[in-house]
Image (cartoon, rainbow, N blue to C red; front, side):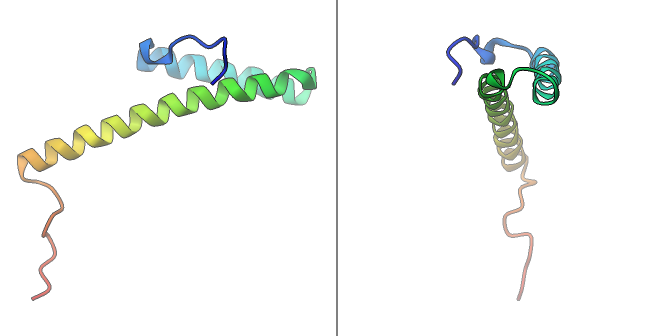
Length: 82
């Protein structure tokens, strides 16, 4: 985790995606033209944002799975081989 990154869990989904897009633009610019010494710092930030997006995706999938189990639409025992 980058020491200067704010708490990403407090951002709304739209804000997180917007900031990630801006960060990727800066990363690409630094990779093409900019100072090479900035790239590892930007990579740490990119990793933090990606980890937060993956965490949110996992939470959403778990909530969807629980809802499907509750509604009886889960994928358990849907294939009967007898």
